[in-house]
Length: 436
Ligand code: XUL
Ligand code: CO
Image (cartoon, rainbow, N blue to C red; front, side, top):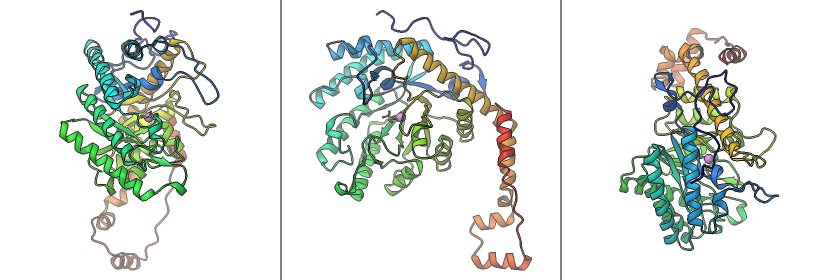
């Protein structure tokens, strides 16, 4: 097959290079905090934006014309797309990829035909994975594009739609297992609502709770060892998405007894749509044992929707990477570029530039974050701030040895009048800037 992307493999040339098709910061074999950079970052390229999206928007038709898009036989198109996808993964040297069932293989007119299409493409994917050594970070089912899902999948008022979604997830999870996927993702695409006039919130939550329990049961039944991840998003496409943010999912998982079974896939632009910073969502997940994987991209501060742009600000990503490193780094998760080029970026090499930029920003951010971890100043200042909680008073409160009576006695006996201490925000911000 004729190559789709220009040039040869992208390699590390260092910060001084003026070659736009080279890495300045991403040196996969460089050791960072005891591991090669490639293993700290675990990059994945996504199938849907990079190979599926045609550049259409609500006002305009497709702007991207790719060879696999004009193919009259959709299965032949899927094979061409697959060839271009693995060509990109190899050229970038990214170790992982991610896909939805419907990005990889066309939907048929029955579920049985859709499954057969995916099975055939999965066979070709398997071949490309063994030829290139590229691995699957996660698979997922598209439960939001087809009109049958317009009122939700698991939260649909019609149990037949629930059943259809369950059948679809069963198949994609099995394909993910067969491809040795390291995780399986559920983004509740239309699990939410537009108006309470036609929505029973309590029922829909119970339906979603049942659905997730069925997914977990099936994972154990087939022996899939990967992690099940839910991806929070506050709105878009529905007005109120049930998986609003990490905290909302935490409450949901506890209500339905799933908190030891499911973790989170946190996306930058979803965090910011929820009014949070990306690092807040990571820190919340880590503090509650739910940190799984990341969809790396960025929004536009002036636009209120999910623009899914490639990350390009090392400072922002550095704080997020610092939060990841403090959480112990990735285990089964990684950094998935759930990001798309702009509609006017119509050339194949625009896809290369986008990924090279994103990869370099994350690599640079990792190096900055590693310095923050290594010299320990930020952690030291944080530990000092909470030192009282490691002393006798703090410990007796936390261990349950205190009561309101004993605390009142403690204050009155000593005539206690605690001295406020500065939060030192500006000093800390200056310290962060000193690593950049
Ligand atoms: C949508 C989104 C999805 C999920 C997978 O905003 O992020 O692409 O990552 O379904
Ligand atoms: Co995503």
